[in-house]
Image 1 (cartoon, helix red, strand yellow):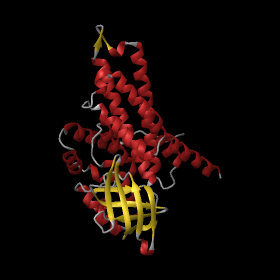
Image 2 (cartoon, rainbow, N blue to C red):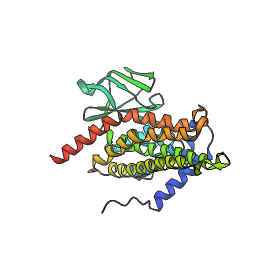
Image 3 (cartoon, helix red, strand yellow):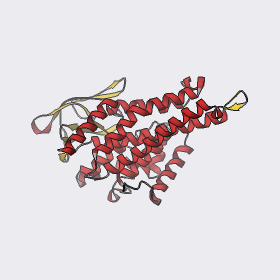
Image 4 (spheres, rainbow, N blue to C red):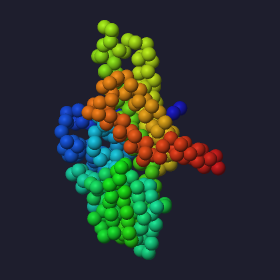
Length: 331
């Protein structure tokens, strides 16, 4: 029998509270980020002794899904999936006390996942990381250097943050770094699970928006939803979104376990990279001319998913990782 993904009362309360905070807020991303912190949602995975709820990766995934559903421009994936969860998993008690309470007050963490980083004498780091999300706001950056993870202060000598078309690049020149815990860890598991949860919400929100449009928009005296071609297309988006939701839940459950199956992670990532953007293009098509308007919120959902697909490396990369995991398990 497969896992039961039904939410318990606490998880239902997280989803409900997140929806209320996100739905009631129409101000700036900075103000929304502060409101999420005031509601206690940024501390879901933070240990109780550091002021959080100690609920882990699954609760974090549920929050990210609601944030994605609203395509909210807040540094949630970077701070929670790339920062908080790895610090909770591998950080020393002292590092957790130093880093995690600040998140409750809205401080930003992030991680550099892709790049060529080498560790020299004394663990000093040199190299360049591309696509470091929210690096301009972060007070610490977790850097994956081979099989080791280190903490870097962006304000330290030798650190340069440069804007790029996709975000920010991080350049390190003989930078002093602090190992996260014993230095061993893999940031990618939490990154993939969080990206899938955020993408799940973005696609679900686009589907909800599109379903409302074709229900309320009339042509020839009839709602668009009553036309057979429209009904078939929105049904295809529904199937893609529901499959994404189940895959994202499986990925979050897998990330929450030390012996979790990487196949669940990369299956969800592959579905996000291969199916979400075509489904979103259908949503734009079903909106007609409105779907081309740059100020219509549907574009935020598409931009969010496109960024996540880039961070995940695209469908072929995810398929390669999935295949490599199958070979590893066979051995």
